[in-house]
Image 1 (cartoon, rainbow, N blue to C red):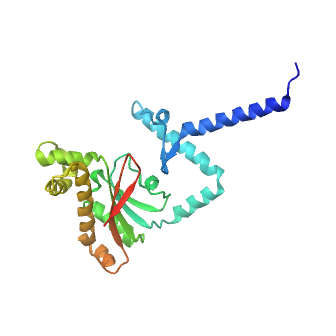
Image 2 (cartoon, one colour):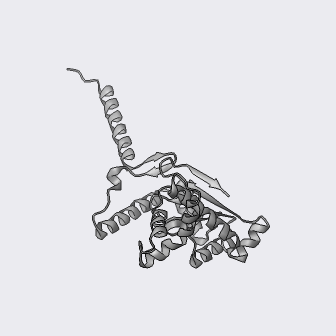
Length: 240
């Protein structure tokens, strides 16, 4: 039997290529531009030690990639010297809502202020003012999202003031007025309506909450808008 070595090597190369492609696909895939880890990677750690180990492993992988790229090293060095974000993003802490991924941005592009329910207290307001006045951002986006657990909790709190207690209650309480206002229109989906109303109310408050922001909005140097992110489709709706 005479072997066709050229054919054998072609088969080996093809197999190697398929294996490599499969390995990449096993690490991640993209859907509408959003990076989503496959189920095997997204398996939840069993406890704090395993959680920390996963983060450490992630840092190691990222560092290896950075060492391989001179352009990446240069970018990190520039960002270490100074940051110049073009927008402040007021978002929810929800793990499914990652601003840089949603908006196709990278390190240094967004100054992100996040808390459950994307509310803005005094410290959050100070962070927004810092991002605008010190870092020079010309845009503030208040981002709400579908199926927001904080807004769902606010609907329960609106019906029963004892539904939540302690720090959680104080975090959710600022959303309740938006829930009550949305409820007046008897919407088919109260949660979605309340998310939109919560975003609108925060946008309007930010426009006048600090003189530094109000002045910039008035003379056109700053724009403050709301946005809604759909978890299922990946779509983002902007609104004033």
